[in-house]
Amino acid sequence: MKRNEVPVVANAPAEIEWGSDIPAAMLRHVGIDYVALNPGASYRGLHDSLVNYLGNEAPKMLLCLHEDHVVSIAHGYAKATDRAMGAVLHSNVGLMHGLMGIFNAYCDRMPMMIVGATGPVASDLRRPWIDWIHTAKDQGALLRDYIKWDDEPRSPEALVEAFLRGSQLTHTEPRAPVYICLDAGLQEQKLEKPVELPRERYASAPPPSADSASIERLADLLMSAKAPLLLFGRGSRRQDDWDRRVRLAELVNAQVMTSIRERAVFPTDHSLHAVTPSNWVTPKGKEIVRGADLIVSLDWVDLNGFFQQVMRKTDRIEATIAHVSLDSHIHRGWSMDYFGLAPVDLPILANADRVVAQLLEFLEARSEAKAATKGTAEPKPIPDYTGRPGEEIAPRDVEIALAKLREDYPLTLAHVTIGWAGDVFAFRGPLDFLGHDGGAGLAAGPGLTVGAALALQDQDRIVVSVLGDGDFMQGCSALWTAAHYDIPALFIVSNNRSNFNDELHQEAVAKIRRRPVENRWIGQRIDDPVVDLAAIARAQGVAAEGPVSDHAGMEAAILRGIKHVQSGKPYFIDVHVAAGYASTPLSRGE
Image (cartoon, rainbow, N blue to C red):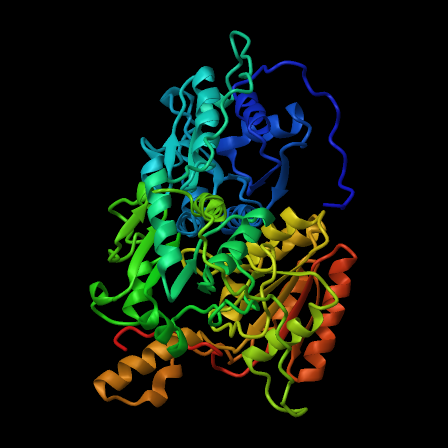
């Protein structure tokens, strides 16, 4: 963040004096660099401590205009770093605004330190009316089913332990947000005795490895398989983990599949990467699954759903199936994000990247290891654009334009639309693509982009997001935070002027009921009047252009946007595209 803000008046006390100084100090102690927030009186004590005790540094505050963005920015930051950021939510009402984003981050298994507030818990300290409606006996009940842990500390010492435990748990796999609710009365309490910060001895546990018997069995299966298939799902942003995944696939000569819902985990232009990463299994992908004699899932999300697209009775899959994941440790009863129960012959409760490292060590040490025909990672040529000037832009054309430019500019895709083709813009490194929003909740895309750009602003990366118009309009005020703090990111809206995914659902229902499919647009289209999206961006201080509706104009606009982002500022482009998807979503009932 490069904007020269009004400096903090320097008068920071040397010692912790007030209750709220403790959580502020603990956020710094556990390594939180940023906290996003939308102000609220329930944590006015914490706000003061962040500014007047810590000097608004480590952590530094990011002001947001909506609690949705508080959470989605922290979510995007975690997607780029695998580390938690702070998200501060005001009492009941601010928390309820942020709940959808918290669900997204939970489904995405991303770490996050969420700090809320209630009260004062002591009723004699409450102001009439407002403090009463913003006090809850068990505020954590609002989100306990889709976080990892929560607490309401009631003493200075309990505050210290809450932040230590919260940081431990959110960074321990399987990761997920944690929530700490602060008593407004305790925040504003003058401390009666000194409070010491803990020593550096409360680190999170490293990701667990597999037992030796499981590694040996899995290695034997890989070495004897004639048609192995590796399904790479969740994975870290570490380059060495990326390199080991590639090495394993090459060593055992296995075909590889990845999902567009997850972050980039394997080079998609590698010869062993079998099919385009997509939301749904392609016909070629189904053939590969049917022909495999060994399928190894490395933290693949919704493994049974993947198999159901090949055959409905998934226990009839002929291949031996191994599944490496820690995700069952976080499965509960409220949310069905544990998905269908997959037929697994070799379950391994371990971190997928650790298992890859263990397998490599084991396989490379075996003298009888079979010689593998190594794959290559030579980039595939970019398809020639065959359209003619004046033709309507298709959603896939946005991907083609970015693929042409990425040879000269290091691009990170923070978010893409549901209908992303995925067959042109290859993922060649762990920061090329940061995945989906986790829980499929609209309004997340803009905030995720800001959070990713915040995390990567000191790296040689240009963060780009391709958003749907519905997603943008619900989350558009996240752009103000990008403008205010000079967070550089390129926002491209693939604007079909419709809630088009739901048009397809209405068409599916009409077909089943033999009713007119021509009516699918009613209650879906956003074109009378057409919303001036660029004006919304400019109104928040972001340079913008559009609507762009021709191919040459789009490519020129994207290049201008990239150069503007290189100068350290955000940029916005509204691209009018034809209604349709390059990759059609799966409709219920098909």
